[in-house]
Length: 551
Image (tube, rainbow, N blue to C red; front, side, top):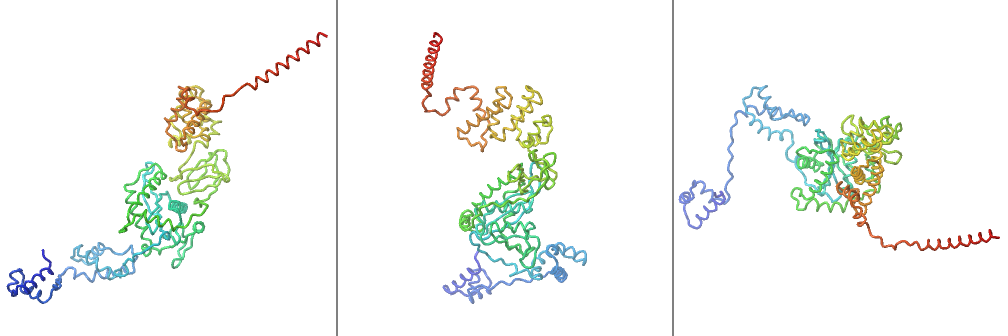
């Protein structure tokens, strides 16, 4: 279909070239003579007139709607009347005969005029951010199926303003320890600290009081943290007025949650979830933000060149507490209990409560480390902490909470169960349990794969004693080291067991596989010489004795 400009151009050309009359032009182009006259007068078609449509029902309620909108001028933003509320008031209070779509459309364009939220006040100004200069931080809520339970958690988000590279972590709380730990993880993953400022809401972990303007009273530990890493904080205006000041992180929290955390993730622990999130953050480096030509990874390289270096010492983000160890070898922290070695019963210990873990110190030595307990009145218990007392009370092992936790976490494996059962058959309940405890003590000094290999070898030959397990575990550990297998990576048990069983079934093959010794064979010639000299000495002594006796 021709546009009016094209139609006018064809009419003008036919009149100019062919000299057709107005009537002839109107017949050829099938338009009114008035249109032909307009085309001959000007090449630009006149603007179409928009007819004014009558709205008799709306006209009767215009003033009422305007009055209701004016009531919202001084009202809080979240308590302003919606179009639905205004329509119901028109029906209930004034008996108006008007449809909801009519009221909705009128409120949509009339509200900005009355409240003064149109035009310049709602305009967005594009911003440019220098590499490595600025970042934004915020928390967001999410739900996780954690160990089979639907649990509310909090996602810390840190975003570099230039590249848009973000770091996310999920914690059971949004308290100060999570706030600090999230920053430390972000700084270390990105390789530095922004040189200009980091933008924040007025988060309670950082701010205790909001003063006039942008002045804030900060918490002491937060001020110490900022001083340690050397960056400035920029606090946005409270409420909706400050949302646009860090719009990048506001959108990032929602984007990441929709992209990677929907539907609700199902994990056994938050450590597992955060490991996945690290991979998702790396995958996000391949994306492009908005209309940018460069990827996040390309812009991140510029950011990293300009970030300030990390300080030499790592800041401890934990909240420092000093609980006392009770008679059960437990310390109580935030209505949860954590085990420590029983030798520390009755003492006050220093505890660092972090967002994802709890670390217990005896002086400067770490004596216990637990994943943070989320549920109220929950417990984190390690069987290793009770082995010394169980040596004296072996009958307490079977029903102990520590054993139940070890089974649930997989630390007490099927091999341990098999050894315990066989040992009790051979050695009796008490002695058999003590043998098991001695085997468990081996885990303190030897790698777990080697100990499991030792248990398997002992069960294979039917010698269910801790001494046999220790010997076989040392041999397995030596074999693993010889083959340059990293014990930290915990190689699969079948490989370790096969090494030990091969030694039991085919010793010659193991000897043949040992490294060759090129040193010369030992010689006893020196000892032979000593024996010859000693024999001659004895002969002389004997002859002298005989001569003396003859005299």
